[in-house]
Amino acid sequence: MSDDPMTEFDVPDTDDLPEDVRERIAEETDQAGFRPNVFPAFAFKPSHFRAFFAYHDALVDDSALTRKEIEMIVVTTSGVNDCYYCIVTHGALLRIYGDDPLLADQLAANHRAADLSERHRAMLDVVETLTDAPGKVDSTDLDRLREVGFSEEAIWDIASVTAYYNLSNRMANFADMRPNEEFHTLGRPETRDE
Image (tube, rainbow, N blue to C red; front, side, top):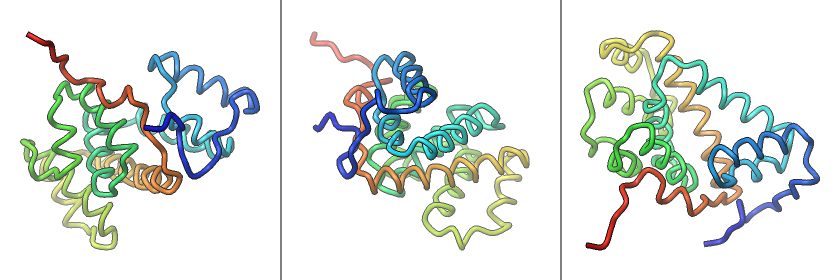
């Protein structure tokens, strides 16, 4: 597997980036223990980097959804879009936030195969429709979310996270962003030779 964050565009040298972009990459590297490839990849265009991650932060920091639910949406969206980068990276985050090593793999392949509550199945059904056939979403989809207990704010957040990651998936696929090897094992139980 290539160590390059993406293969279709040149990744800028960190030293050539604006200070605020370098600082954000350094913060994310410190937090993860490695430099997640999405950061140097999106640094290709610093103004877009700032907007992309500012919206990401708003979606995560100001949400009526749990972090587990956000990651469930991301993995399902990314599975529908065949986004290798986001399936792997957000699959790792779902394993961590959801404390369930199987759920991410199930959602990436087909959320209907997962053991989900009625609430989460309704959420992911809408996510799939909004991703795969956005013109088919209508008030019956929103009513179903209300019926299973989502607030108006949470319903808005479901759509916002889905829409954002449809953008992210398309850019990751277009640029051929590659997940760091570390993401493949994060949140998985350790196996030991007996």
